[in-house]
Image (tube, rainbow, N blue to C red; front, side):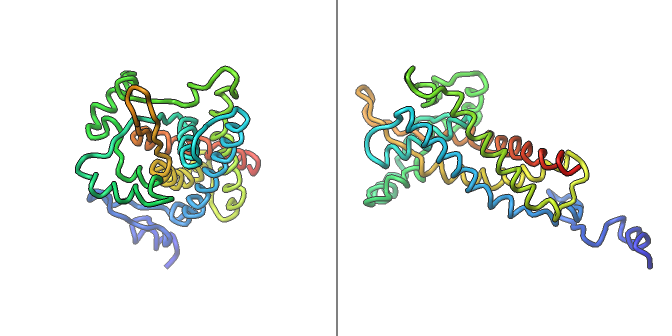
Length: 260
């Protein structure tokens, strides 16, 4: 039996194709999609985020950013990294029902405060529809959004520098990923280049979700006392996936233009 007849007898599916069920609907995944090195792309996400963090730390050091304990500066620097992805910080609290569990964990010497974010929920996060509605309508003051980059002094590094770091690092990650695996993939059109960006984005989103736990800071206000801030996890999902998808795809696109 020829390959063409074999394909016809199986409904046109090739031997490397896979069929999966999505909400009761059978979806055929092409061999090129199945064989794509998704894990290799996801594995590049931590390195890309680390590059953004290190670059941000260097820029912040030039601007004299941060004060207080090492843990506090680490958390605030992480929030600046999120802000540079257009993800604002939001005020948050530990729900009363979680306090009996959270207090012993947060009290662990050394690492306890880094785990505060496990139990902290942002303002309005319990009511996602009204929270997202407030974001869309621009009611950031009511939501309690905070952007540390925009609150810099006039002598600090220009804000645009912070906002350029993530795109530059992600374009580089996308370029390196595509250049390393180009021979192992089938990329016949520019639309297929997006797979490189999507692979990195899947891992990048996980890294940001973990980071939202580690980068939870406690600020002291003369009026409100201690205020806990953390990245807005709703916008984290949006921008945390969009940024690497767009910019890593652009980096891979440079490889596509060079190879075609």
